[in-house]
Image (cartoon, rainbow, N blue to C red):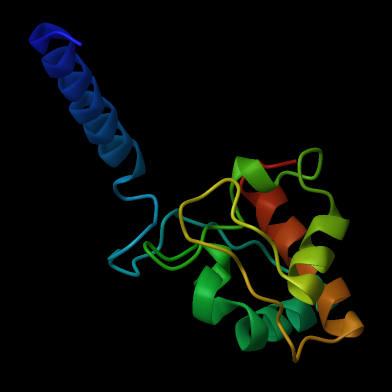
Length: 139
């Protein structure tokens, strides 16, 4: 291979690496600040969703943040268009909590199962997340 091609290949690798860094900066990954990743408007919650908020706060908020706003460098926001019902149905949340999930949309790494969450908790948590999503224009 000629020197020109080697330098061109190296320059391309640097551009790709820099582009990846710019695209993922502030969206999670290693060394984030833990700051909320999105702004969440909290509506007047139904009684069932208030129960779900309590279960979310106990089982999910340590990673996914207050009101599911995510935490930079820790876990994604669930009040995000990626998790709209047509893309991630309710069963996606159940499966993630019960069996864990492989990282596929965000650079946070795999999510482990949440051992302590019950089926009753999960039903209410999903209801809570869906009410937050609707209040924030995610249908």
